[in-house]
Image (tube, rainbow over all chains, first blue to last red):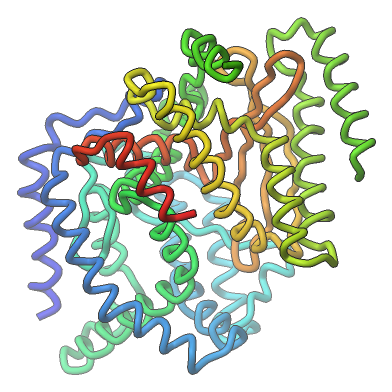
Length: 269
Length: 199
């Protein structure tokens, strides 16, 4: 069951990629007009975005609000700590793949310290010892290896993504300790894997309740806002070959000199 | 941090910038400018023991003084600025200004008990502009990266963009408004009408 569920997004991604991966470029944009992102799958994406929006409105958001109603901040922080701690080995492994042994050792130390003294991650003891949290994943690793991100794509339930990020997510799912420690027993495996995913989704959604409400309320095109913010955030991931000489992606050409004069005229009218 | 102090600061800034020949804003001056703005915001608004109405008033004033909303508004309309009529331009800037003040006045409250930590400046490819780098410690996990884009014009510094975790607010708004206008037969007028409902 789980295996087939896993295969589905891969197949989907592969077919999407065949259509549009060939035409994507990864160059860093410098002018503001180039920043109007390519979105070759826009009509599909908008439909999927709407589907996710409805799912969120009637299922995920009410669950997140319910979770908030029956817990307090202290409990939620402990829960988030446990989930975050379970992810440390993944960060440690990916830092190795990114040739960052020091960061990897830090993640691993955090995992050992917080799993024991921090009571399974409920308390971040390691941070107080000068080992602050610093997470990474397969998407960051692939980016470092210069794998192009591909076109923007909205995934069912998972939201804004790119093929690279989606493959990263699938890897993370498989390498998650909860996934492989229960793998030998098919009976309990599915139950645990799904509950775990659901619990993670609810806690994540709870932490974003205000932010997403705020963004939606102030936005005239919520899809365009999410796409823009997601892609800009992704563009901070650099390939190892050009990490030194590349300029900041947000340093777009902000000179509107010739129109400045026209505007000043208008102002003084 | 009172009015006198601020005007003294801007006087000094003008002098400094005059000497630097205005090719690129002075890094230290730009950093000081942003630090003063955030300090005033946190001390005089968020942590101040005054009514909400007074807070809103102070925020609007600080926002208008520190940010160049004419410049940002023109940028976020993108290519549609060129085709917009003078009336549309004026009305858009006005509505964009009001929307930003009301949105950020609410968002700003979340900085309660927090402080910006500054990490120097980075040069920009745009003339007369510079980036001021800062971080904000978060309750959980790593601090958030906040970069301020500062533009100097006529000896005065203004913030023209705020970049949070690599997401530029100016670009996000520009992409959003461009998409809206593209999909809307009403064009700029429809955008203005829609934004008005959000104030």
